[in-house]
Length: 261
Image 1 (tube, rainbow, N blue to C red):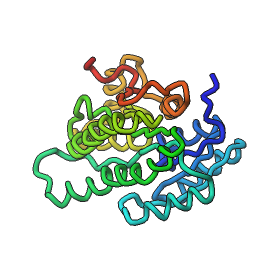
Image 2: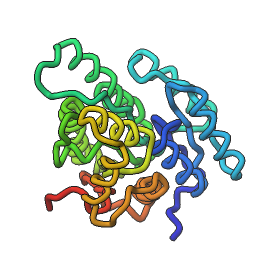
Image 3: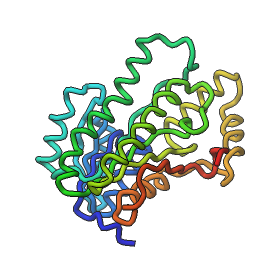
């Protein structure tokens, strides 16, 4: 299937990580020019090098999303070096495991400012260009916790749910301009964050991490953790012209993990 996105420009946040890197590589394989953004330059450079070595086009942009004042400067650089942004993939890091109660107001404010506000502000920055062209894709990666809250991930469950309401509302506002806005959410995909969460649970419950992982795997209907490239392929499809009638949706990439319909 030709997704008809060859030559378009994508900005992928958190592209030095497992999910973000997989998304960036999948888009590049379709001929998309990718701005690889991450706070850790060495990880972003690894993704960029892999894309360029495979014949794609990518450039690294070291970016601390918590710095809202840097958004305009960074987007202007991307526009100058790669072109106007057609596809925005909002993929932010998650907060540490916590209970939902007993957190200080400073903690809530800090993670809201690093996980939610940058997504909204950055999207607002690129939307005028998309509207001018009459085409654009806003894809925001969250967590299965927005549908089925995950124990001990109180901050993540709550703050990421904010982005679901925002994305749904945005879809109605920008749909007439040829722009789609969708949420994608992973189940248990084999990345460094999932490994860290399994290890944290094992330590908290004083159990071997292998036991925790086996228990988690048993709860997934397909019987395994997902592969990052599987996640990247779905995001890439949503970026294509064939997905023009999909907007305001929450797309689960979870192997059937989430128990609700």
